[in-house]
Image (cartoon, rainbow, N blue to C red; front, side, top):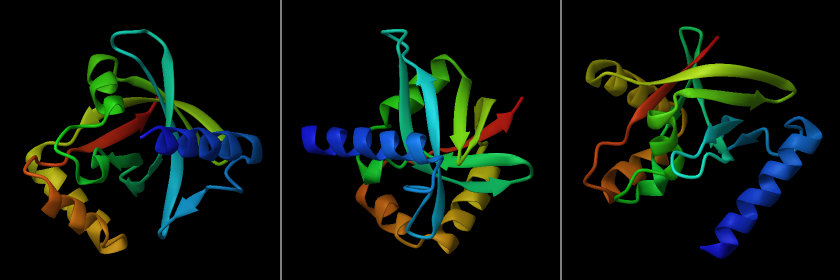
Length: 137
């Protein structure tokens, strides 16, 4: 697990320093940097995530690689939905909102169509993987 966190730290650092020229896409999907505020610590945390776009929103998924628990950033944004994003060289503020069940399914289908590997995550877990809308403000 420590190696994974080290990889994420290096990936994030490279993305920030190169405005996404390094790390701006993975497995055919664009990558953004999501910064949330820790619900317990109050510290900011930045996580690189793949996204799709839908009706002016950036859409991310709390897949956690198919683990049976939601990722920490998902809990953080549920507690504090105002987040900051870096998309390549653009920095913006957004409000996070979990997609309702009908929209969630539409977004999940769109994501899996673009990146079929996510289908495997769904098979690994018993939880419904949330889709999150990031609405720029």
